[in-house]
Length: 173
Image (cartoon, rainbow, N blue to C red; front, top):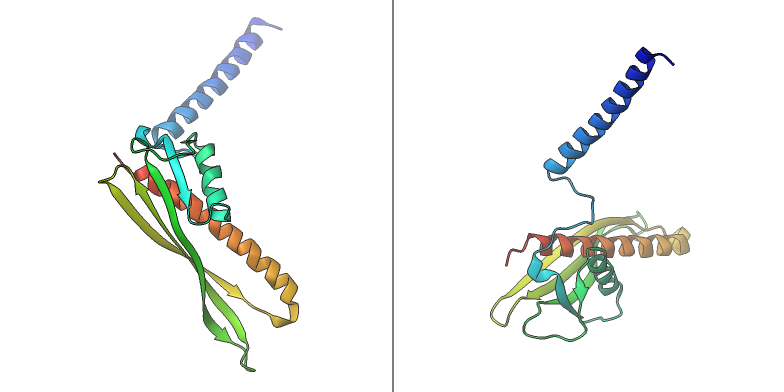
């Protein structure tokens, strides 16, 4: 290999490294971060989680999201540690359309979540939000529609857990 070929190979390698370094710097400088990776306030790095439904899917999803984000969960509440309280989650449905024979053709599913963040005895912040989805019902394939509804509810609970963490990441103490 001649001197010219070696210098061109080195030039290409340095160019690739420079492009990768530039892209990494550009992406990190614009505030980009992976979805599900939230920057939490240092005071919220340790929490106590309480829930009306301790073994419910929303509670499980929130615990999972908190552990992914390196939030330490303590088993007992103390006045020094903030407490995340999942108060209520409920599912309602509203009829959107009906078949000519009077059977419901389409529902709107409304998943409501209420929770509180108790930072101290004097500083309790309440939150409430709703997630909406359209669901088409077909009585001829009830088993498949039942499975689809279960999957949709699971997805809505995952989205609710994400929303709770997004809200927590915006709190400045």
